[in-house]
Amino acid sequence: MVNPRYAFFEEKIVPIEHAKIDIRTNSLQYGTGVFEGIRGYWNEKTKTIYVFRMEDHYRRFMVNAGIMMIEIKYSLKELCDITMQLLKKESYTEDCYVRPFAYNSGLNIGPKLIGNEQNLFIYSIPLGEYLDTSKAINVCISSWERIPDNAIPPRVKISGSYVNSALQKTEALLNGFDEAIVLSKNGSHVSEGSAMNVFMVKGGTLITPPITDDILEGITRDTIIKLAIESENINVVERSIDRTELYTADELFFCGTGAQISPIGFVDKRSIGNGKMGPVTKKLQELYFRIVKNDVSEYSHWCSKV
Ligand code: PMP
Image (cartoon, rainbow, N blue to C red; front, side, top):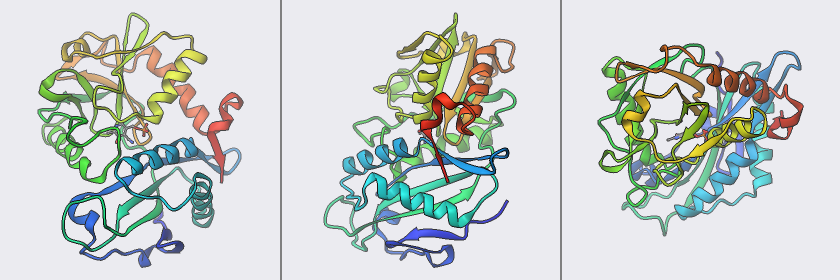
C-alpha cells in the first residue's frame, strides 16, 4: 500500500503535505462539512483504474452541499475532471478511494451555515476491503439509534453526523462484532449499518428500508436494486423492516462504496440462514465485482477510465 502524493486543495493540485487547514476552521469545530466516498477499481487485465458511478456521487455531493448551504464553485464536469487529474497523477495500480470534502473553511466561531468562507478539497487513498466480502460477518443491533432526519439529515453525508456512526461501530467492535445494524428513532425500524445500507432476502424477494427510514440514499443500494431487477430478475421491495424480521431472513448483506457487498452471517448471535453467504448475495456480489471493474459492457457507462 502506498500513500497518496497529491490533493486538490484551495483551487489547485498540491503535494499532500501542503494540504493543511487552520485549527480554527469552522467545520473542524462543528462538523459543518459535506463529503463523498468514491471507489476506483484497478483492472489487472486492462491495467487501468475505473472510477465507479463518479458522476452520481458528485451529483449527490452537490445536492447535499445545497442542503447544508455550502456553495460548490465547480460544475459536475469540473469535479470529475479534477478527480481524473488527481488519479492520473497518483497512478495507483490497486483499488483506491476518493474523498471529496466541501466545508466551512472560515475561521469564525459559532455553529451556523451562513457568513462563512467555504472551500473544497479532494484527495484519494489506496483502499482494499473495508469489510470482509469473502465470508459472512457477525453483527449486532446497535444500542445507538440512527439520527432522525429532523435532527441531522442522514441522507446528507455531513461530517459531523459521523459521530453517530463512530459510536455504533465502536460499540460493535468493543463487543466483539464486525459491524452494527442501527434502528431508527425509538427503535422503530431497521435503518442501515454504521456506514452502509442493508438488504434482506426473504422468499426470493430482496427487501431494503425505504429512503424515509433515516438512511443515506446509497449509490450502491441503487446499483443493487437496478442489477436485481434488470439483470437477475429478482423482485425488489422497499419497505420498513422490523428488528426481528432480520433474525428470520434467508439472507442479509450490507452494501456501500466502502463495504461493497458484504454478507451478514449472524445478527445478535442468531444465525441468518446457515450463517454463510447465501446464493442471492453471492450472485449479486459476483456481478457487482465484474461491473465495477468495467468487465460488463452493459454497465460500462458507470465506469470512468482514468
Ligand atoms: N449509509 C451510510 C451512513 C454511509 O456512510 C454509506 C457510505 N457512503 C452508505 C450508507 C452507502 O452509500 P454508498 O453506496 O453511496 O457509498
